[in-house]
Amino acid sequence: MPHHILVADDDPHIREVICFALEKAGMKTTAVADGAAALQAIERRAPDLVVLDIGMPEMDGLEVCRRLRQRSDVPVLFLSARDEEIDRILGLEMGGDDYVTKPFSPRELVARVNVILRRARPAAPEPIDDREFAHGKLALAPASHSASFDGKPLALTGIEFSILKGFLARPTHVLHRDAVMASAYSGKIHVADRTVDSHIRNIRAKLAAVGCPEVIETVHGVGFRLGRCG
Image 1: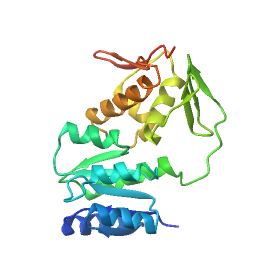
Image 2: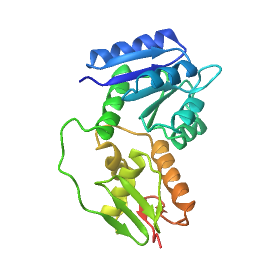
Image 3: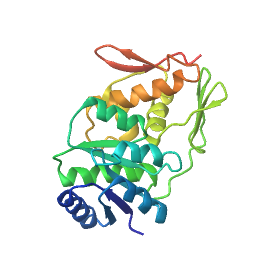
Image 4: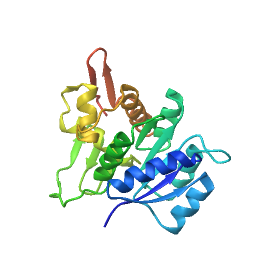
């Protein structure tokens, strides 16, 4: 079955361009012009991914994502006319999976959608990874996609989970940004340094909230490494 993508943007030309590109790539699309309509469309039929413009009037994309995350973990790709770090950070902290700045290449957008979809729902069955990772009080179980610190469950996005798994798989290594994002995006797409930093910041904040402020350490000029997690 082709993937169903919901496209929410108040600009009819952008909606048309995105839908054309996605449908040319073999996907089905539904297009809406505002945030309220996006939530209604999701209620009627759950999509496989939402392309969500941040700058919509009345109810912006960040508010749509905030409400959506109260009841769904459907992947979200944010669009924004501003390449502002605060927009990128807020979007990822709300639970977005990626962020594209307008103007954008339709081919790049389709590539990013495909990467997110492969992460969310692999196209082909893969052997179940029964290994469980542990480092100090931090534990990850990929087979059940669960994570916890000192017995407290962690609500991680798919990308955050993959990044943390990459660190736990190599607990003594210092990882460059490229290696960190290869854990999340399979190395098939370029991701800006600011996006990497935003994901790391989100992971740190979630672990700090349950008592682990040193989960990922910065090695200046090199990359990141796993902290003590004690």
